[in-house]
Length: 79
Image 1 (spheres, rainbow, N blue to C red):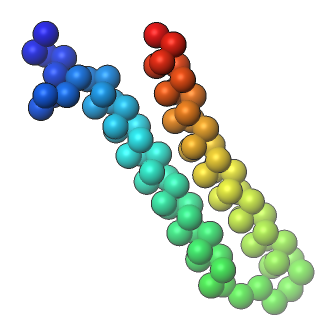
Image 2 (image 1 turned 30 degrees about the vertical axis):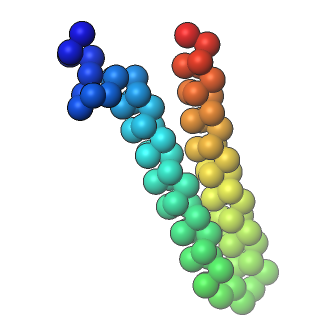
Image 3 (image 1 turned 180 degrees about the vertical axis):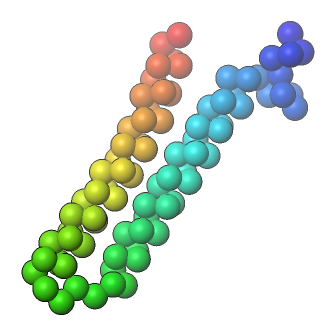
C-alpha cells in the first residue's frame, strides 16, 4: 500500500498533477509564441499569410492540449 503513495499522494493523483503541469507548460509555450507573432512585422502578403498560418497552428496546439487533458480526466472518471 505504501508503494502506491508518494509524499502522502496516490500515484494516480501524482500522475494527474504531472499531466496537468505538462499541459499548462505547453499552453504557456504556445501563448508566448502567439505573443511573439504580434511583435514581428510582416511586409508582404506571403509573410502575413505565414504569420496567420502560424497563429492558427498555435491555436490548434492549445486546443489539443486542453482537449487532451479533458479526455484523460473523463477516462479516469469512467474507471
